[in-house]
Length: 517
Image (cartoon, rainbow, N blue to C red; front, side, top):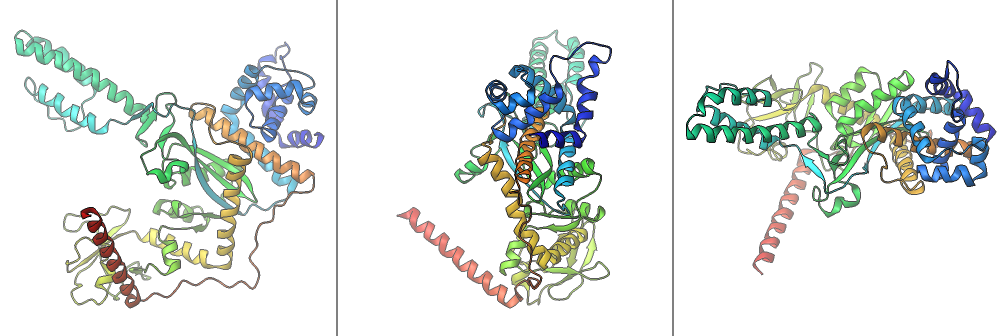
């Protein structure tokens, strides 16, 4: 226990507590409790049990370990909650990074290799009280408002009308309400205004980057959790938050709580938070295919981060079920399977690139022997040209990731990613019995995930003091050879496509017979 208190003292978190909690007593007076002891006992509680405020209060009364830490002081659960909120809402990342830095210093672990993954944890909200962003309804309402106003005014605005503008038109419409039709339109416009205010409020709560929120926790977003995934994606929506962590040697180095429903957009905020906490970027970073995007690869190149992030068709390439349809030469020109060089366009036949790149067009594909392979995923298979909507930077990022993942170091990173990151989530959810947030609101949820991860960190610390801690994970043997992708030529791949088409037609025929019977 004394080692634990020395650990907290050396971490520098005491200076933060002194500056924040004792500022009101600088001119005299005595605080109701020793805040250093309260901090130590509170985070210690999260390493021993689920850490509810009532449970912590009981521990202060009946557990000798907590009595020692609190020096027999016994604050109520309300006081504990107030203290945690006042301190952690502002400084949760700072506190966590100080504790992790001291842990790394004492244990001497190397954190060059980092692993990123995420999970969704259910929020403390009523699952039947979610609200969808009324984008379509708002557009339809705007059309109705403009149609009504055009009877009396000339509305040339293409953008959606705002409520303040509609209110001004209602005021002007007062001059036209002498007849029966004018009064009717005036009342209808008032109803439209009330509905418009409702839609604007919902859209403001949702913000730009999400499409739903919950009435009992407006920061929570409707998501499909893993326990309901196989009952139908989108059929069972729960209030949840997206939790991302960066792990090294089984320790969560940093965390990010977001509202994103996919991991693509959470990658950069999580790594940036790591940089804010420690002043440097991870040397090597490994993540699954859910993070492989153009924006994330470019971000890693710019910040000189070792790229071990999988891309979408990584597993298909490893199994020989996919083939590269193109490559780029030294002049950054796209070359197709047949060796033809494509022409680059920013617009082609009214089509614009969907990605952050260009349209690369192979003009004449009439007699190309690779047509069956190249046009498998194309709708218009009879077209005499082939248009690739790709980005050179994305291709380059995927190429670097593939080369790194196939090395002995890449194999080691892949093996350790699944064991380390999933291991932390497994301990938190199963061993620490934590699968649902108790606090509401994004700020309070940050506090809660911080306290839970501090509890996990302290568990590792205590095993280190007992001499039982193991920080070494699987290390690739020195004689381990680099992995090679299976060689798949176009002829072999064409046979696989034909077999796939035959199986698909047989399945469709079987379904038709089943419906008839």
